Amino acid sequence: MNIDKLLNLNGTKIVLASGSPRRKSLFELMGFNFEVVTSEVDEKEEEFEYPEVKVLELSHKKAVKVAENVKEGIVVGADTIVVLDDKILEKPENEKQAKTMLRKLSGRTHIVCTGFSIFRKPDGRCVSEYSKTGVTFRELGDEEIDVYIETKSPLDKAGGYGIQDFGALFVNKIDGCFYNVMGFPVTKFYSTMRQFMNLN
Amino acid sequence: MNIDKLLNLNGTKIVLASGSPRRKSLFELMGFNFEVVTSEVDEKEEEFEYPEVKVLELSHKKAVKVAENVKEGIVVGADTIVVLDDKILEKPENEKQAKTMLRKLSGRTHIVCTGFSIFRKPDGRCVSEYSKTGVTFRELGDEEIDVYIETKSPLDKAGGYGIQDFGALFVNKIDGCFYNVMGFPVTKFYSTMRQFMNLN
Image (cartoon, rainbow over all chains, first blue to last red; front, top):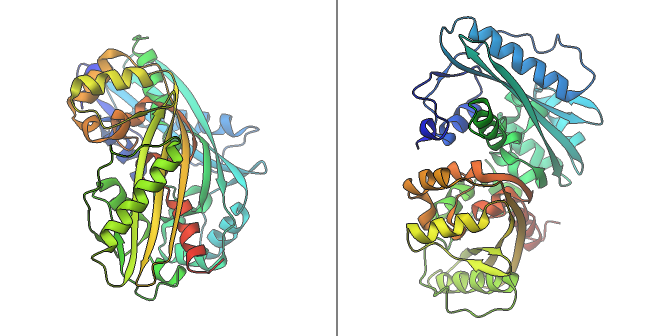
């Protein structure tokens, strides 16, 4: 896949500032040659009024932090949160929390919000964007929640589910970008990169 | 994944009557133990007034055909079509057709419709359902269409794109089930199977 050509990157180094295996697979889907460098950013410390602001700020922090050790290239940070009734659902800390979370999501629509920041070195040019998707769960039974939690998949995911695994069976419909729910809005990112590279 | 338990299958043999690698991966996602058996059904022969009718009839034909050689078990047939302006976009026959198709889809919303049929042997119990998803493409440039066609991915896909590969970058938003666009509406199938097994 010649995304390097489409974005006129001319071999610019691309760094994904995220340890998420989902984001890694989406960068592969887009066809990037990239490396992964993670940073330590305290996600819970942030205060915020709007989810959009939180994901924009956190993704920016992550990109800037990793960019400290990059001499030349484009660093991409990202952050995803799950919001129900104006409250953020973090990654569940244990199976009991995961169960409570999935019960809360059952039969309702929540919002998944992912922000990403593109930070270029050495010139420091930067842009941040976000994407929001509505996700509607069907009514879930206790047994299927238990079977899902047995797989351990809920434990490392905001909101306690993955739309790319068995969690897919909980989703009745989505409104917006699917890949945003997976953790990275690929189309929005691609369009933003085109603008960033002055191609549009 | 204990979907056998959730659906009370008690080891019933599951046969997927489709050669699509996407459907195979979605049956794996759902956690089924299954085998793939394909049939020769002429898809173009069918006349129909509504896309829903076409996918229901074709998925039923495929299931019944494969079930002829199954003594005991559940056979699942499926068919997906892409509809723009009340016309069906088949799999493109060559790169030129793929290009024309992607240009047509550019900047517009089309419908992806998948029907599936569940056929049980030996009792012959059967149910068919379908799912429709709206897919909105952004405005596509010729260069990105060319780069995509170079990957050959468009050539074996109805509508000339795959939402699970680089084609994802063409999609601005979807309204409905993502996996339906990939070729099999997993949530609808799971709910239908629950009803089929008298569990709801």
